[in-house]
Every structure is written in structure tokens, then in C-alpha cells.
Image (cartoon, rainbow, N blue to C red; front, side, top):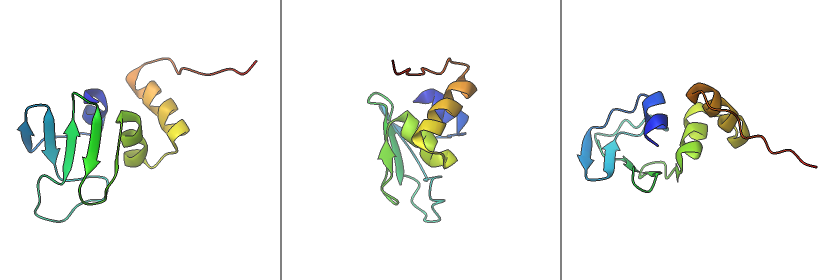
Length: 90
């Protein structure tokens, strides 16, 4: 989760233990609420209280880049310098 947050330029505005908070960049929150977007780094999950987007690091990358889940997985692997875990059907 930390690597995805770094790629997205996530700068926390508040921290409470394993939970990090900031404004949501997924829906470009204009509200004054600085804690509308929360990340639990221990569970590797995120949730936005404004747009109700939630999920794991891959789902966060897909939502932020507006790619399908499959395309996001390939893109994220390339950006992180990892091999794409292709599944071959026999």
C-alpha cells in the first residue's frame, strides 16, 4: 500500500497509528474536511467517506488512474519494476 501511495503522491495530512488521512484525490474533494480519505496501512485497505470508494492497493491504483483492474495490474507492475504475474490457460 505504501508504494502505491508514494506513486500517487499521497501526502498525509493526519496520522493516527496505522491509519493515515487526507482529502480524497479520487473525487477531488473540495470540502474543508481533511480526513475524508483514510488508509489503514496494516490492513492495506482504503476508504473515502465522500465518494465511498474503497479497496486494496490495486483497486486504489485502478480508481486513481481510471484504468480497468487488469490494465491497472499490468501498469502497476511495470511502474514498480515487478514482473507481471501472467496466468496462462492450458
